[in-house]
Length: 239
Image (cartoon, rainbow, N blue to C red):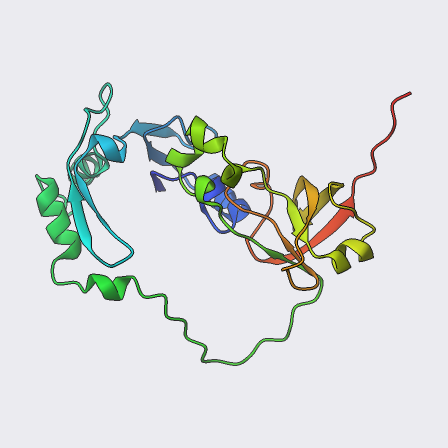
């Protein structure tokens, strides 16, 4: 299994399933600009961060924009496409003969409708499923939890948008569970669990709890959406 510029325990919709798949893989190679993957990767290959290599990105307008490297990568780190090129060539695979980033960009995007690739259209066809029972988790990914770069930015992690996840719920659910704003709760989902502070958000629907994903404190939970159980943690007084 090849993990490219990602941390599956934080970047996947179901961290527990991702870790289980990594554990079953015969060999795991992680390509990262950081010391990520030591707990599951057999080999970590250093790659350049986006500021250290030329490349392209597509804006929210569907506009393709290219950029140049601003600094050189440290040590023997190389752009990810060059590392992949060497791996593919060493394995004798076709399609790894590209020599420049311009050739890579052309191979990826030539003749493709970029705007169509950005479509968020949802197909509502199919049979309606019955409403689920139990408390339902609603997960978001806060802006400064979203990728390995922002997660390691000390200034960004000091902002309000990087506050640690809480178990947000409306007053009715809080009352049913005998919780108050600020109480400590144990959130369980499948075989995973997380200990969080309860917080009030009257905008949430009944029987729903919002628990952010992509954070170390919630990586032990399962899928971003599904049934969870909540239990108040009793704090014992120290004599």
